[in-house]
Amino acid sequence: MAQTDTQPPGPDLAMGVPLASVPDGGMLAGHVDGAPVLLSRFEDGVHAVGGSCSHYGAPLGEGLAVDGEVHCPWHHACFSLRTGAVLRAPAFAALPRWHTEIVGDMVFVRAQDTTALPPPSAPRGQPGRIVIIGGGAAGFAAAERLRGLGFGGALSVLSADDAAPCDRPNLSKDYLAGTASEDWIPLQGPDFYARHAIDLRLGCDVAAIDTRARHVLTATGERVAWDALLIATGAEPRRLSLPGFDHPKVFALRSLADARAIIAACADASSVAFIGAGFIGLEAAGALRTRGLEVHVIAPEAVPMGRALGPVVGGFIVGLRREQGVAFHLRAGAKAFEGRAIILEDGRRIHADVVVVGVGVSPRTRLAADAGINVEDGIVVDACLRTSVAGIHAAGDVARYPHGGGHIRVEHWVHAQRQGQVAATNMLGGMHAFTDVPFFWTHHQGVDLRFTGVAQGWDGIRIDGEPARRNFTARYYRGDELIAAASVGRDLENLTIEAGLRRREHAGRGHVAHPESA
Image (tube, rainbow, N blue to C red; front, top):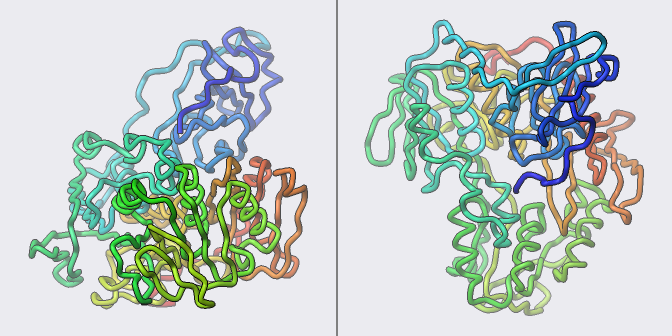
């Protein structure tokens, strides 16, 4: 998505503003020479950084300022208000900085500060060789953060995908709709990996992990040595073992290759059917509807996503897609695919030239299990994302980690990236507990829904606002305890709820126990 072209709000900071107008510990949004700028005041002085998120260009002035950080209102990236440094994904580029000057009771933003921030010092006792298995969200974020922290050793990313790490959330949105060029999809170009000495190996299948000799064995027989290892193998789509679902016109949507194949298959199609009605499936259904195809969604639920979001919010999203012309076949299941039609369990036939199956994913744990690492619906890790084998961490969709007094495994893009970042810190000797709150966003018919917290175990929902007006927050409770929230049109409120959930999770985290002793 491109940055917004509207005139930045607020005062012209180059002309000066009263120092008292800059909230202590907060921020004042303004502009300098047409560029959005945030002015903030702390005990160490006044600072000015860019006001557009480096991820998708969101106006950071509409975000949340807390503890010297600004949190993006759209996708919850986090930056330092003092230095502009990017602190947490999904953004990876820092914000620009400006010089400030205080004259009397006025503060002025002067020229842009183009001096480079001091490079980080290399961590003491850092491993000589780090290997990351997996080129998805967690693997990329870990590699990027390792170099950002000053790691100077050998760094290899072994990815089974044929394409470099990509912006996967976009695959089911603009890319599938045909409104985003493929230039948008890679997270970084080839020069990034060369410049940072990241040995990115595509189409590289890992066959085994040798925990004693400390190397991984690739499918081609190559041995890649490691002193520290990150397993970020993610998850793989579940398949349907029903008649006809091995047809070449039946697809899953997980990778760039999957999206390309679906687009190619739809070029001469008139109708597509989706089996399953999750977030990605409904986004993709809307994207292909934009291409002019007849779109059917077949799902067993009475209200898609009702189990996670409740009937009102789930029904709201379904209503948006129905307005677009997507046909829903609910409380229904597929029985077979005959090449041009889906046969439902009740005997109905749904015309479909192309079928996309989205019935969930399973964590890729085989490598870990074969290596003797503790596995239970994912790779079990402690709060620092360490596995049961010393020297090996796990992050992303494959990791099952402590949260809220138990263990959970979360399949969200931003969450995987942030786990990769924390794992990178800890692979260099850190002891940082992962306390981030799960967050995702989903886009339907021009409407963005943002969800923070864990969509499991709630027993009550309170909705403030009106879904019909596309302005509401749904709060999810377990007893009297708030555990999650979904919002539309209330981005700052969603960020504030997330911050509260994060504080509670951090305060409730006791000592960090290693899986071997837990």
